Image (cartoon, rainbow, N blue to C red; front, side):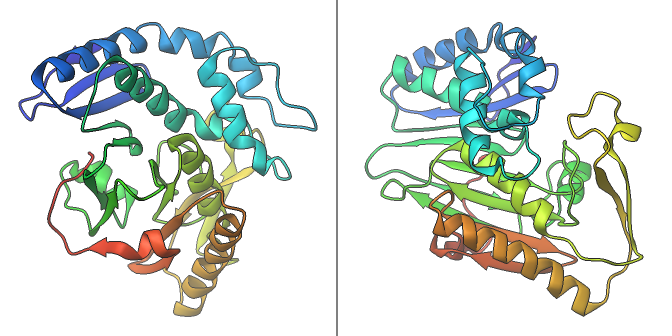
Length: 293
């Protein structure tokens, strides 16, 4: 496990596939206490998940999986609404981890605001009067290559908003995608819920075209929980009608999740075009302000 304190004042905790950027605002003693709590909760967290990995990679069925750990249970809970399609609790792992660490921090000390960013899946804490501006990217690939690439826009989350979780998914993300979205950013009441929904919406951003190439997930990663399900590996040039059709499919999925109160809003990006769904996502700001990443 590597830990550090970057010059920006943000705490960095990393082990295996988990990479957390943490920031807390409050009195100096409270911030120190919260950071200590984050370190303590993070220690052994990966081992905790690996112990239940067999069930976490197993597709959900008619009954909830018999997982025991609090993070594993949170993952299963966030994935449960999507059990009508192929889904495993791993769909919410990044968001659930962010939630767990943030929860430990908030319980340990009074903080004005705080966030835990786990590779783009963010858990938020806001006290009355506080807000946070979250950067929205148009392409996971561009952000991953540039590292410091400027966000396309910002979404302001105020303390009165129900949004406490934000997640981004897409075909160039850390996980495989069934869809062709460059990026799908979801705003929800929890980070685990946002994580699961972002994946589901990103999977729905798709269309039929010879420019889209897919391969079974197992061929790319023998340990993938997706098995032989085809995932997108390449997207060539698409006609305008195909782009609009794919974004429209994603919009339908997002609107259905808003109707079910599973998310508050979503921003979809494909080949430079955007779709904004839900009031929470329409509060995008001009570039400027603070990012949780």
